[in-house]
Length: 183
Image (cartoon, rainbow, N blue to C red; front, side, top):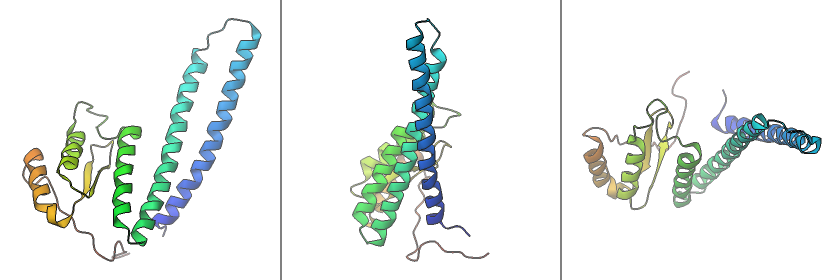
């Protein structure tokens, strides 16, 4: 059975391959642009410009993917080292990156639906310490918040004042972490 660590290593290994592919495509587009400039003929470069834009989007997505794997490895190391403050800081950075670069805090089926961005903003307002980020973004997901125990009741009450009674679910993480319960 694959572990999260082995899956991350496999996926992160793909980012190198994808970067090489985007670099090759960038070289190809640059060659087409140079041919167009040197030919002296007027030609429609709209397709090249569209490809250049698509390539830039792909390159940004590959960079974001690599950053996410790097950040996940740093989060795991922070937990292994018992450095929970660094872990929380990395969770916040990951959530901000996800929202800004992946723009995954709203549903593609209803972009006017802004429940996740509103919940994130309220959670950040209520938190004094801790961390918050989108989870399952792009699919009208949820938010995850790491709330200091002493602030939990006020946080839950504040979120339910916004979202409705019973909409804030408190989960506890077992000290042993994830394990196989049955195969």
